Amino acid sequence: MSWSLIGLVRAIIVDRSTLQGALDKSDESIESTWLDTAMAGAFRDTIMLTGIGLAILAITGSESDAVWALIGVLFVAFFSVFTRYLMAKKRG
Image 1 (cartoon, rainbow, N blue to C red):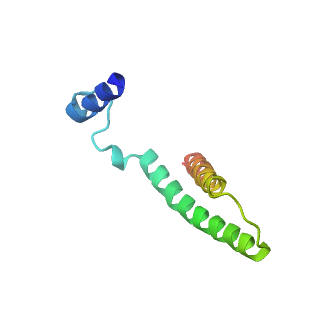
Image 2: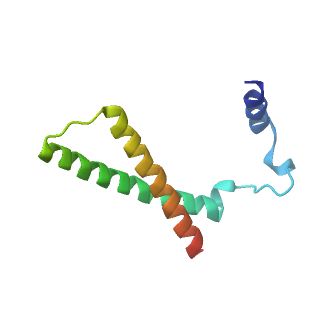
Image 3: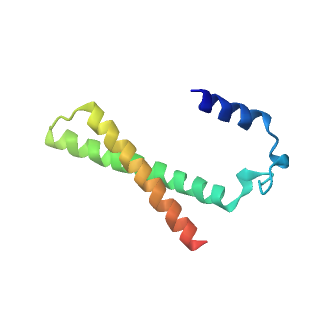
């Protein structure tokens, strides 16, 4: 736990301008823009696929364990962000 605490203290106390090669405004980098776009698209994908999955479960009348359903939603969200980020990075 001490390494986590050391990392947290360093992130809070160390000024970014004193680090060599660090961006002053990291939120304005192109990678940040790619990630924001990917997360926005992944949110739409997750909502859409969760709705379709729930509709299929409601129509068929089958039941599933809530833990597995939530794991599936997380998997869809992470995969979607990863795929969209790589696509944005490739486009430039």
